[in-house]
Image 1: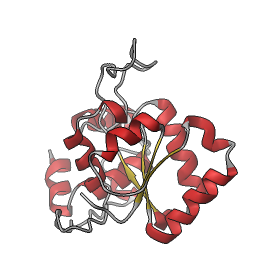
Image 2 (image 1 turned 90 degrees about the horizontal axis):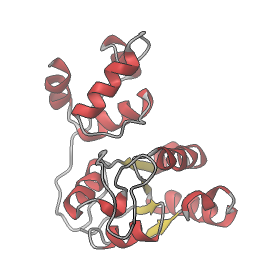
Image 3 (image 1 turned 30 degrees about the vertical axis):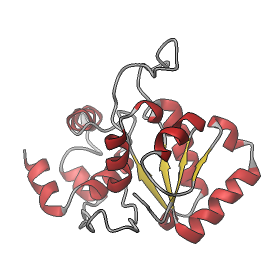
Amino acid sequence: MKIQEAIVVEGRYDKAALAGVVDTLILDTAGFGVFKDGERLALLRRLAAKRGLIVLTDSDGAGFVIRNYLKGAIPKGQVKHAYIPDVYGKERRKRAPGREGKLGVEGMPPDVLRQAVLNAGATVLDGEAPAREQGNLTPADLVALGLSGAADAGSRRAELLRKLELPEHMSAKALLAALNALYTPSELEELLGK
């Protein structure tokens, strides 16, 4: 699948896994190396301005630290976020699972990676995917649904994240963005009505 946006992942094994799924420029952050590498960050900013950037990090805590750093360093309209589900296990090349016991981008099946990129709103250049209608939830909707601003909002959000197979570390703001990217307004109404 050929897409317009460049994709940034955490490391070289993530790049290798994704290279078999999408035809685009794939860069890595060298893990936390991006925090100290001004040139790498400048390149990511230029790519985001020119063609858009999709951030696809692991669903563990470290992945969210990198994602949030990039979210703050790149203008909002130039970056899209792709999420992989929380799947417990270990990658084949590793002797033991990671600290949180979750598979990273490199451990995901190709169809999961492809769907994550499509759900992020990637611009497909070869006509493989139809344009999706985007959701229109607002932060006020999350408050009304009890997913933000209430005493038990955190536990409600955690339950919804598990149900939707989204990473457990998503904040209310990230959940809002993911819901709007993944579901049409009618799908959201049906999903949240249950």
